[in-house]
Length: 258
Ligand SMILES: [Zn+2]
Image: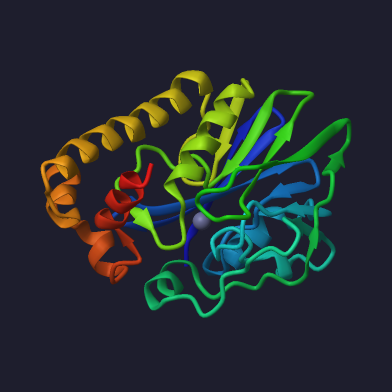
């Protein structure tokens, strides 16, 4: 079971789902509520708590950023809501054991193509393609407020590469989001960005700095493993637990291709 907490920021409420150990959050995912619209629907391990938190004001519309189990996990649990995402959205199935333990098997229900976007009151939620983390990842842009709901397109300073991700596309998407000049960015796995130019810029600079360091060591003939160790440190718990699905070597390989 994951603990769900609500954090209001003006018209937006962040529903934060955290697994805690000795009071310390171990891993976190978030979805966001704006009126009767949800951006992402969290993971099934938090289904009961999330539905309780929203019971007084059930969502009508769910916008999905991408097909991972910690984002569309509960779409099928909100029967009165229609869920939308990228056309032909790739939905995570038969997820590895460690992800099942963390998030639970997803219950995506039916996800319809989002088309040109959806309205909630006076606000428009427009799909903003941000490939990289997954090829079909969508952020959602709200022009009336300058908000960007970023899903997993802005994961903080990357230390690991993920299977199926494209670092080149991820970096291009970070730049596209920065260039849109949002007033606030709402990511899935970190706090709300209140200074997106600075914060997205720092994530871009981090990746470009890593790219330069990787290139230098690659020119010296170092292996991916040796470069990962030098630039990113030992494989780390996530690398071991995920049996290599997340790994520092994958990030090095992705950076070499930039
Ligand atoms: Zn994801």
